[in-house]
Length: 219
Image (cartoon, rainbow, N blue to C red; front, side, top):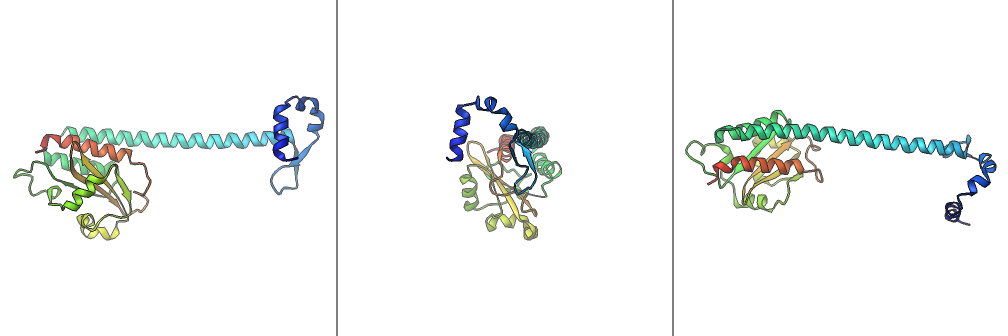
């Protein structure tokens, strides 16, 4: 008889536990694997229930922790949204984007490149409008969602100047409305800050917020 047959029999005959209650009470089993101590089946069931309860408690604490982190990020995104939408000039907008990402999100390296935006005399000197190649445009347009990982092309690396030697992780978020008008690249010397497979929902929302704020300056 296989163990599965016993399990199936007990499931089909629940009255077995009532009919043989005394015999079951006298059965002992090892307390723990490879342990010499023994306990009754009922005690073993209590131990199993306690273990399951601990697992559930740990999972609940993990979910609470995730919820608190998401609430914190949501609050930061709210502050950033207010900051960029309240801007009265493109200069102020570009400053507030980087200021909030640096100060509120503790992102040390931020580079934004834009194209297809009206660049009057007051804006032409800003590095955000530095000419970018068609290859960069293709990369931005090909991103169906933000990229997170440890590699970017040399042209994008060069945006960070000498600091690039210390950078180990990157994220790339397209700035896109009806058309792609830019690329936001965040970087960190911590290789675990932006890693493949990480959740990119907030990065996507960040790109949408920036694009919406830029809309009034689009050519």
